[in-house]
Structures are given as structure tokens and as C-alpha cells.
Length: 84
Image (cartoon, rainbow, N blue to C red):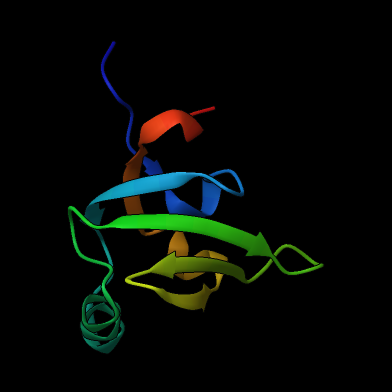
């Protein structure tokens, strides 16, 4: 069964996502790449804020909160046993 690429904003809490595409441009793209949001890296979806935005992600042992408008432009596939 082929894997389906989903935006980080749609990933379930506790899941691990292998990044495959980042559709962000400009300074934000450079910042995300510097933080470890690069294709091939694994991102863990940590928790949502009480109102659901932003969402905390762990990448390279760093926890980063991204707004939905940012995380909806970063795509990847579920990895490991966390696939729902």
C-alpha cells in the first residue's frame, strides 16, 4: 500500500512524520531548514495548544511551536508503529 503525504497540521498527536516536502518560501523557509525541518528528518507531533493553534513539534531534540498556516505547508508520511 503506498504511503500518503499529509501536511503536518493534519498529523495526529504522538505520531512521527518523515518529512518529504516543504512548500514554505523566503525567510521562514530558511528558518525552518535551519531548525531541522528538512526532507528525510523525523518530526514528532507533541501537543496542541488549548485552542488548537499553534502545535508543538519535536525535531532534532528541539521542540518548536508552529502555527497551522506554517505547518500546513510542510508535508510528510507517517513512520513506525504510530501510523493511525
